[in-house]
Amino acid sequence: MGAKKAGKHLIKQRKKGKINVAGILLLNDTGRPTIIYGPNCGKLAHSVFVTDIWIALKVWIDPGVEFGSTVCDGLILRKTNRVHLEADHSMKETKDQWERKLAKFPEASDDFVLVVTHTAARMARLIEWSSSRQSFMLFATLDGLRRGAPAVDCRGRPATL
Amino acid sequence: MPKLEFHPNLLVLGSPGSGKSVGTARKALSFPGAIVCADPHSDSITSLLLEHAEGEILYHNISDLNHPLGYDLLRSAPAHLSPTARLQMNRRRARQFVETIMRRRGADIAGSPLMEEWIMAMLMLYLYQGKPKDPEIIPYAFRPKTPQFKALLRDCSFEEVRDKFGTLTELKPRSLRTEVGSGARLIEPVFSNPEFLAACRPGVDVGAFLQRKGKLLIERDKADEDVARTIIGGLGLNVTEHCESREEPWPPVAVILDECTNARTAGPFEERKAGETRKYGLHWWFLAQHDNFPGGSEGFFQNCQEQHFYRTANYTLARKLATIVVSAGGRRMDESRAEAIDRVTTELMTFSPGERYVVGPRGVCREQVPMLKSKYPPWNMKDGRTLAQAKKEEKLCRIYQRPEYKTPATPTSGGKQSEESSPSSTPASATPPPTKSGTSSSAAERWERRKRGST
Image 1: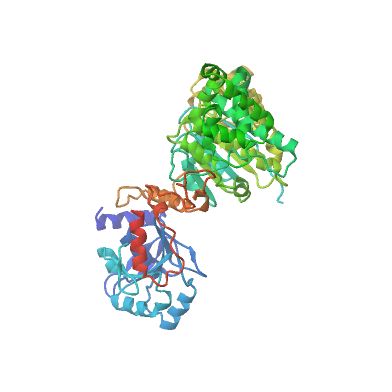
Image 2: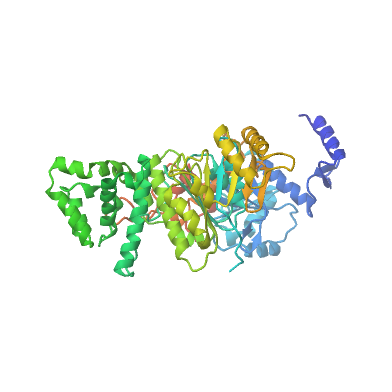
């Protein structure tokens, strides 16, 4: 279905009350704001980012799964591999805040954590800050996931998802 | 202990495709206790429960030797009991096994006394072994000239049985065949089957698993019918013994036997226990296409307080069930009994899938059971599987990681079995358990290693 047709369909469904408008977001710096459909949620932009990751990876993400003493943005299951998703949407977390978040993860785990950022520069900075939990952390950018590029670990080694 | 709720025994009758499995799976998912579900088919009620159930789940595909589950089916009575109590318990176990094995011939024990006598003695010979032995030695009880036979005789602590088998050594081959030939022919295919031997070994602590409200799902798939029936019968005995011996009848346990008449998993033992074990918190759910239970269906109708009748293609059966429905209160004010029976018979023969009559202590009601929808959208994965299939396989991979699937060493095995589960075609179990520390290896290396191990 083309975008125009999809848009018309969405408007009809909205008028019938079958879908809910969660909000309106400016996804790029310029351009028309985008209407976001779905259930109401607190952090709309963050949820849209997680959904973009979902679409890029083409996997089901189970939300609300605990890891250590915190809850990540989602859990991806690949056969017996459990991968917890951390979506760094805001890119505003400082080093202290990031290390406080990592402290809530277990020190060693059979699970993995995939950190997805918007830019490669931000990814490099998070890799630097993640040395305390390097044994199970993988990093990727959203564009990289869309292109099918592998994730990398703290040493820069690739891991094909 | 929570207040005991009323959980009736259940009898579900309906033609193939009438919605029995879906309706029963719905009820099982809301059951507040442990479940043991035995399904002779694949992709039926067990598959639905596997997809939708949460909590502790064990899945046993009997034909899958890469993920066997052992139930210690032929365990002897505990040694701390008095000799009389031990004898009573062992005899009861052996009798139940004999009854299950004899269902293969469609006969009961009384019809073949010689066969019954020797099979009972054979099982008692094994149960009274001083040194524990692998169950694959059991068929050698009827081969007097073998070293395994001599070992069985030497280590048996029950003198009466030892003397009985001692007489076999003096028989000529022809006499031996007359005496034990039929029994040997009956037990050989079952007791030398690797699937049955795997189930006889220790593995699952059934009692502890049921007390944790676990769900044990068993599928026959491609396994031999007799083997599957014997395993299910033996497991039923284990479950019954656990429920009867526990201090409190909590949590409730439901044993679901799908296609119990076709697979012959419901017999006199199950009928008897359905009438006795409700006070121990054990409930029986029988699903069948027809009421051709061995020994008649009256006992099952009597002992099952709730009955579900789905679409029935057979007129005679539909009429019989219609009589039950009308007698339980399914008659309208303005119609006679005969008219009501005619009406309900027609309804039973023309129900759509999922429609049913429920006859229970509260009377009769007609209802439509909605389908169990998959909780995942119908997406297709890159490899051609649907999302639901992929999630089911992932769930199975996680279930197979449980310690119950690790095969213990057998007492007199050839040393081929080890503490770890045997490697298999299914990727996840071939992967050695990863180390928790992992600080010295990079995450990417560990990821690629696990991925290689799983492909």
